[in-house]
Image 1 (cartoon, rainbow, N blue to C red):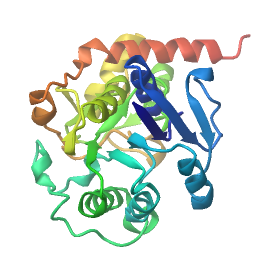
Image 2 (cartoon, rainbow, N blue to C red):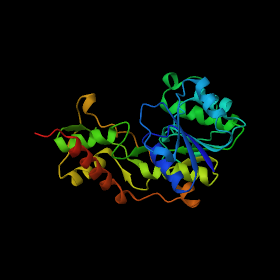
Image 3 (cartoon, rainbow, N blue to C red):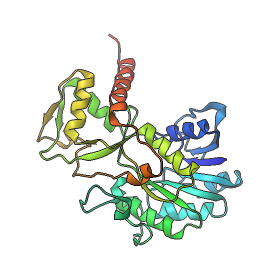
Length: 298
């Protein structure tokens, strides 16, 4: 089976590609080249920028038919329209990395039925004009309503791991380790999260099992921002310096209103998310190892 991965060298992409390899898939990745190829000869590497449709079309034409296209860099309906134009007749199935940010209204836990991408009227524009949540919402609607191939969408909450490409995880661990102030306003919302390893496995599962439709993906454990940094503190042997007011540069990026994702659908179909106790402290310890290795020596 042949997979084509857009964004295959990133935070989640590396886990996705390795899981596909474990299952014997032939994998080609398309990436800008800003991140070195971490796979060696085991993966076909195509250096191309999604913003260059001519180059992307040439890359697609060179592949022949594709069993599953995994897309981690589609952010808005413009990107979705490009996917349909480039891959119609070339791909059998499509797996879209969406987001829990597609939900709104405060009704939690959110189930997939709380946003019906087949009935939602997509907005026109790019992520810059629509915002992240609306960009993903409208991209889903565009794909589900217009794509000639089956589509599955993975709705992820915050993805946690020691090498987070957004550096949110690392920043919080640094604050805790250095004893710096972390601003978490009163009434910090409770949220679900997902482990980066599970995120990669989940995308692979959606493609390998020929799933279609929207799917939530999250651990069952619910944390607020204070819970999260206190768990970091226990692993790092530090007491987090949490305050309720301060400047924006000190404010936790994990602070949000309550946003819980139900994963009843995915689990009823056989996917099992790793309990948070099985990975959170491990990721903090991995961060500390990396941090210690990179720290300047006296």
